[in-house]
Image 1 (cartoon, rainbow, N blue to C red):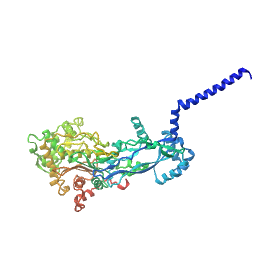
Image 2: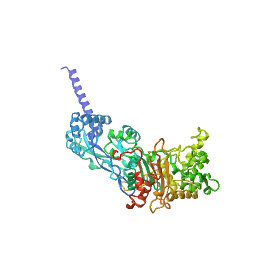
Image 3: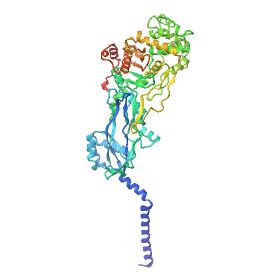
Image 4: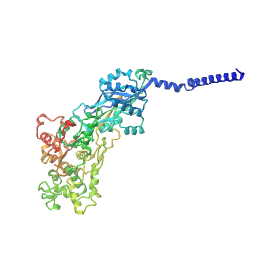
Length: 615
């Protein structure tokens, strides 16, 4: 070998050794921390710990919603051997294709992290998979919770349901907050207070660091748990709902369509909120089946629709106390106000005896008698005299035609016409349309929630409180209690005290000697107003009723609406009376169980029936 070739060979060897030494130095010294983290990542797993969803209680501490165990199987695609698809499918008792599809979805989400692929598996399936975990790398198990409803009060539209997060919801949440909060397969509130108070009920997930073996099985805690992050900020909700009143209301609406809502007139808290027909929240416990969901959304009676907060209807004669206050406040009854009388010959003269009929020939009536007798002629005349813009503004002050500051998102603002609404109508038509507004008919629409809020103003003398279901939160970790945030202050509706008292007297007489006499609560003076809301076409009219009690110290105000059951005294009034009695007395005395109020409430059946067991 020549000397030159010898030198070149030695230089090549030395250079190779230097390169190896430099690479070793880089790996062991320069990049030691980075590679140490990668190695730890292969042996350590950050396990997301979702806190148990907060429970929900009624005003008396009765549990309305709580949690029971929910078993979930997860997939980590990068560790999963596709030859195990059949094995896993057999353990879960499902087709192979379902496992393959779930694996593809998990790969699309994140192939390196466990994704909850199969929720609400049975305990037996969970146990079998746990036993075979060493044969199924990339397959994990979790124990979470699902919602359970232990009381007779379904409260479907108040409580709402939870469901699996959709891809769109996940993208929205991840664009707004930390991705740790939600991931594919998580459940969140979809409707009701479950949705409105989702952040409080859910809380913030924590992290548990665990050593795992090559099969992904946990073998021990990391650093004795010192590096774990506990879940935080999760709360129980305490509602103002009274479960007994709620359950009674639901029982009185069996095979009916309609709504009932009861409020405390002294703070706006909701004692009962019923929309019928409703649905069983248990349908959503394990993820609702597609055929069940289609049945719910396509049902002719719309069980998912919240009639209490969204259903628009003319208020009928329950509107007359409002019109009386409006007339007195706006001077429509002249200088003598409450002493002014209007003559009722059984119709309003503008109709020449054919239109604008009254229920009877009442003669000369003042404002109190007009409410007691429900005299159409009196209120036709008030509407004929009124300014439509003033009418619209006054209605808004009472919460009509606007959305309420409410802790349920599902609501509508209603329809209260203004000067522009009738501007295109000829003058003779416009007068007819306006006069119909005086008796709560025609081109107007209000919700049961709005009627109930208006009744609280009549009950307390002039204060419009924000309606709310949630009374307070309780931090599950610290026990700290506080009221819902952002609850707006009450609004004072400026009404002369004398005018308010005149209207209240008229409503009291309705219950003592008028159309509400059959629905008076035994031993408890009250005030109310029946109404009949005209239904379009050939359908039977709707029954409407508002009420507050006791008269001298009101503790409950109600609005009830029964679809297609006739006038207000035949369905809505007895239901409201029974609910108020249950709340004020704590029971419906046995001697009254089969009285005329109960009979009238139970026998008023709507034209289109729905079988509760179907939903």
